[in-house]
Length: 274
Image (cartoon, rainbow, N blue to C red; front, top):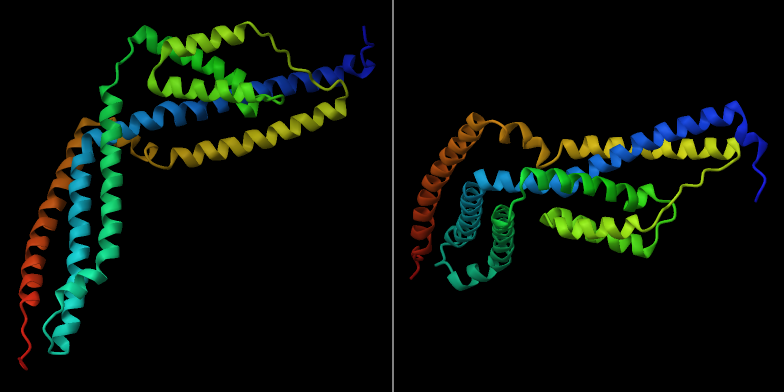
């Protein structure tokens, strides 16, 4: 049996220990909050956003890209007309090839978002009791496995944490139960420094980590999809947003039709020298 450091029994040390434990509890709650935002709220809100607006946003993007394509084509055609030359359509198509590839990539990205939203809503849904249980287990596992909460983080912890995140994202309750059962076989105790100065240093480190995480949470809350949380919670605002997108699409369709007519006429330009 090792002798306890007399300083660890002092009132000052006990005060620091209480301070550390309070700070650790706050930081642990913040870590759980951030993981909940990342692994549950963000996918849920993103899927909800795409459910209500995804098809309209895809149509809007397609029309915007189509107009950009037509504008570039008009510009290239105008260069030939300014020289009083018949446009070389093959050469123009060649010059526009890179733009077409980039626009195709952007449309594929939007399609992938729509597909992910459909898959999210099509997966089996948990009952209210199962939803409550899966959240409770997830919070417990985050406390046990998150790298920011475990100074002695191992490769096995990393493996189990990745399994936990994936299981939570897909609603795999049996998998989370299995990870929790495995961890319950192991009992871990946190060893705090017995020296007050060393403990004070740990408190300062924890304060810095807490402040940094609070900033990350604040920044995350202001980004997509959290910046649309109020919109997605209001049926009236959802309908207004859909109507706004539909009106924009109608305007873009009219502009696209007009631009296509102009480009078609320019493509048929014949040099006066012919």
